[in-house]
Image (cartoon, rainbow, N blue to C red; front, side):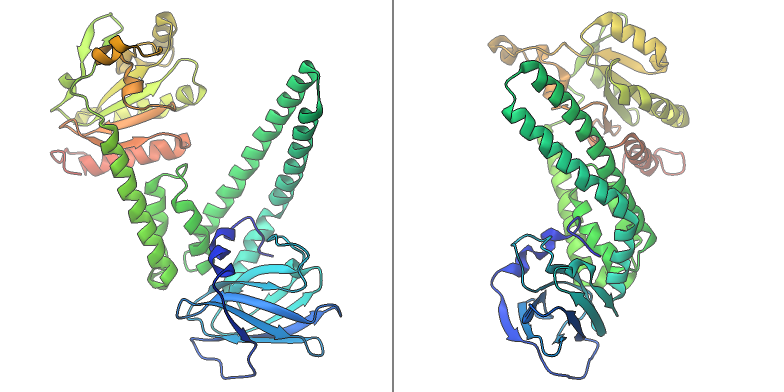
Length: 427
């Protein structure tokens, strides 16, 4: 069944300022209403409560008293709608055994639910809920693993709190960190499964609900967000949720553009030393074509792993004028020079950033002594910034998987060059 892993946030508004009503008798079901009837197994539950948002945007609380083990609900909705059904709850948590979240649809539905096992309810008549159940089944083993890892992490945290031995604490922290790495990997697999589900079910409203939480996830590049939205079926896009998601995408695009402008990336006043210890001004690269500025380091494993892809992009588009500038943040000059040769970066224009240090009053008076990575707020490597021929920033790629970073970068380059030909910087 649909569990707390997704969409919990979408129900927060349902829990307050509610319109209360009693469950209705039998009425004709239209394409703007639903009817859900079924059975409740158990003798202790005297009534159940259904919460949802109706056609008018009102938060509805519908109470149905159980008679002969039967329940019946009816209400007005125009499209699949997230709802919550509760019985004799034991806690206020979303994972209470007498609470279930599921999707209503404007049609006849049936439900069979047992006391203390609401999450195991059998619901028919809702295609959206069927899709969510399918995803839950696919992720069931991973979700169980997450639950077990979280329990173990809590145990380690408690043991660390009560331990007085420094060596024991250090060992426990090491074990907890390994556990956290596993948890991160499992959650990444769950996210990947959810994204694949959305891509493979573009006609499902379940996909649109899942998609909502990914729009603001900065680990997922905006080009992928836009691509997924583009592939949704027309009726899903035209739904209220579909329109809300488009608004969220546009808000993210605006925020991203504002962040680029705020950081004031500019090639105009930058000058660094190259491998021959010669100071080169970056404005020499303006006016020719696209410029990639790649921040990296010899000790950065993701940087080294991404180097073949960066070289592939350069070899593909260098004939169109693409330039690649690498800026190493290595502290030791020898480490940088050695890594340039080892990674085949000699085809690029290479610089080493001014070593990072505590800024002084003199630095503030003379900004040329401030590391470029500081000026451009580079807090993660590899980070790639793409500039157009006029030296204006086009896009920034950081804090995302190498696959997404490279795909997004190449997409922007293709937009700029079109069919392999420069388009005078219009993008």
